[in-house]
Image 1 (spheres, rainbow, N blue to C red):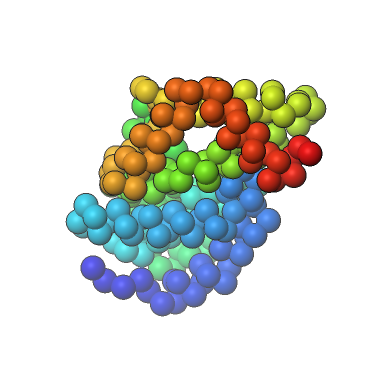
Image 2 (tube, helix red, strand yellow):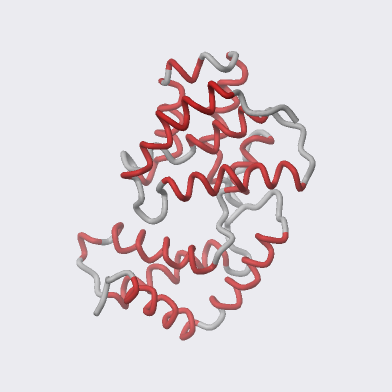
Length: 216
């Protein structure tokens, strides 16, 4: 597989990734993006996928760029921000740009919505968490921010977190994983075991809330 274009990598490192430094609501910051980039290439290697490395890298780098602007529709916003970037356009032809824009939208593929290309399947799979602790942290921060207008107590925030994670990662959950490597299957098994014991889940989230300074 070819190496990433150095000029493309430099542009993204200097102009795209820094935008995530103020985008860390519910775990959508730079650390997450760098993890998704790394996971994308782990998946490409593990499943021996024949893809354009520059496209994979760009999709992973842009997939959450619109989250700060509009969390609920950040897939489309992120795709639009990619399409409006005149400099990034210089690295790809029209067909490649169309596939990239489409894959960015498709990164939240679910049981009801299929990714439209191999690139969408890769970023959707790479976007799946592989650490229970990270997912619990992201979830409680996200739910606290999403429902802040309600001024919820920590028990209510945890209940929101439990319902969301159960619907996403519980048995029959909607999270779509096209390339389930061992990192993900181990995570899913551990998450489902935790979700099946609600008392244990609540305790884990309360302990995290204390660590995060959400409660005394």
